[in-house]
Amino acid sequence: MLRWMFFVMMLVSISANAQKFYSKNAVIRINSPSKVEKIEGQSSTATTVVDLASGKIEFAVLSNSFVFEKALMQEHFNENYLESTKFPKCTFKGSLDNAASLKLSSPGTYKTTVRGDLTMHGVTQSISAPVEFLVDDKGIHANCMFKVKCSDYQIEIPSVVKNTVSNDVDVKVKVEYKAL
Image 1: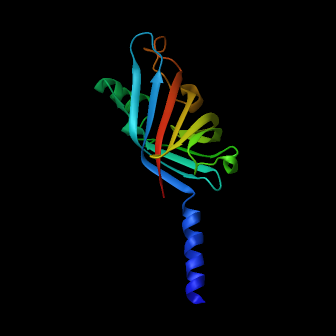
Image 2: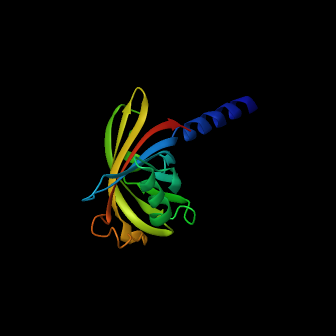
Image 3: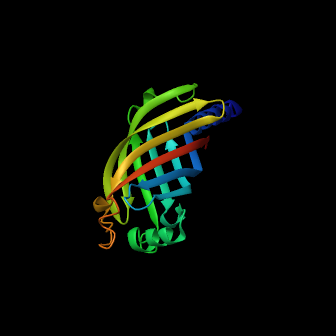
């Protein structure tokens, strides 16, 4: 009887964990339209966990992990814009709409909305964005795109470039999830 109870508890534990997925190398790309030059950066070290049973999802990325084509642009990003020493991490905590209806155990494409709080530069703002999950024989993949405004996060654009650098930043997130 004791063995049977242990076996049932193991099955419950395995099935509960099968609903949680993570990534330590989620890709976050940022792009800010500019009249003068291309302003694009990318981090490939964002971490994320999603619990499909509850719909809860979290992200974290080090501010200084974004890499830019030009070293000077990367320096300005870290020192003047995100102030990476003072605000070392950006986070998102939220949930997926209709998580219970997402059948991410079956191959296919699933669309929903993610809603939650994005904290960046010491400021937290509520955001929502469409997210698409693709399930195939390689796993669960997620893609999400949204915009943020620098001014919403008290990120000041220096006056010397205010007329050439946009307040709007396009954010693209790409994740290859693995079972936790």
